Length: 149
Image (cartoon, rainbow, N blue to C red; front, side):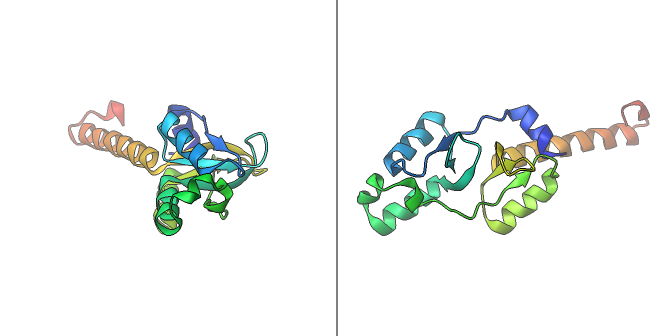
C-alpha cells in the first residue's frame, strides 16, 4: 500500500503553526484539533520549517519550566524533519518511523511542499487492514474459493 492510499482514507488536513507562535498557542492548537503534533510552517502552510509534538513540549517544560509556554515554537521544534513522499510504500514508512523514533511524518510533494501528515497510528491501522485482507485472501484460497484471490 502506498502513502497516497492512506491519505485518501484519512484525508490530507494538516494543522500548521508559525515558528513565532507561542508554545501556549501550540498547546491550544493540539488540544483543539485533538492531535499530537503540528508542522511548523514559514508561510502559507506549504513550506516545512520543522515539527513539534506533545513530547517536545513535555521535555521543554521539564528542562526549562513553565516560562517556556511564552517562548516561540521555534525554540522547541525539531528542525530536521523526517518526511516521506506520497508514492512511498507503507511498509518502508513504518521502518523509517521506527528507525528515527518519530510518530508523525509530513508527506511532501516532489518540490518539498507539504501535502499531508501521517502518524504511526495511521500506519498501524492501515497495516492491520492490509494484513486482514491478506488473511482473508489466504483463507479463501485454502478453502478452494479462488474467485476472491
